[in-house]
Amino acid sequence: MEKPYGEANRDRPPSSRRATAEREKAASAQPEGALSGDGPTARPAEEAAPAAPNAAASVERQFVSSPVITIEEAPPPSVRENVTKPLLASEALMEDLAPMRPAQDAARIWCAAVGVGFLLLGGLSLAGLRPDGVVAGPPAFVLGIVALFTALTSVSYRQRAVAMVVLGAIATVIGLQSSGTAFGWGAARAVAAIALPAALVFRSRYRAYSGARWLLVAAFLVALPSFGQAVAQLALLDPHLAQLGAAMVILAVLSSLTGFMGAETTGAGTFLAVAVVLSFTVDLIIGRVAQLSVFSPRELVSVLSAGMAFAATSALTSLGLFQILAWRLAADARRIDLHSRPTDKDGPDRRPPSGGEWLT
Image (cartoon, rainbow, N blue to C red; front, side):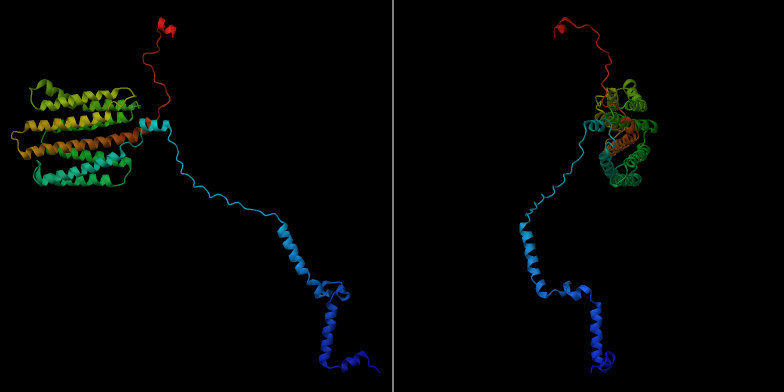
């Protein structure tokens, strides 16, 4: 006789009851399709096994049937050429007619040369070969060191120009005090040897600028006292050696009148500037030699050293003055029309053509 379900369940051991409960829970968690055998879990493992070779075959078939895509290698990127902006003819002409910073490298060279010259003059002073002797040595050494410092230091264009003018002015004053000649005529000679060459060089570099000729007029007015003294020496005094220097000064100043020529020429301003400095230097040397009563090596070295110092100082100061003018007026000098036609001063030719011109 069978026992009821509850009693039979009570008679089972605890382990069998636990296993039965787990089977009932698993059966309740499965979906209905799984019980009927429609789901994928009900499929046997043997049906899923052939699916893997079929999938591999289809992938291989697709790979074989797909067209081969060849990728061409791109050419290596070409090196970009460093293309510089071409220099236009108008820019080159403008730089020739109105440069912005002319003689920039020449200024450094002149400062270095004058600095070495002042150091040599200081050595001659210590050796007793100059008029003031040892007293003139320290100022020459100081000026030489300052000139070398100006040449070797990286400063602006305007600052170096101002330093050159100040250095030249100090050296000129020291030279005039130690020369023993009249301070007034010596100063007039020094100012003429500075102003006139600076104006000539400015006229040469800015030949299309109308203001350059007005600067040349001002320089001629400054040089007028020294020019008048040279004329007076030739006209009023008896012939002597000093008149040779005066003649050279007159010739150099009169030759500078070529600076008033047209804008198509430089008027040889640079060469005339050098000639003016040399003529005033020769005038100074010849004038001192004419005053010597006894020719001795010491006196001759003293005169020649004074002349060299005058030439170097005048050239340095004149170059500095020219650069100051260029720094100040270069922008105005560039306001010119490069495409303007030259004007005919004589006007158009209104004469009727001749018979020969009618035939051509």
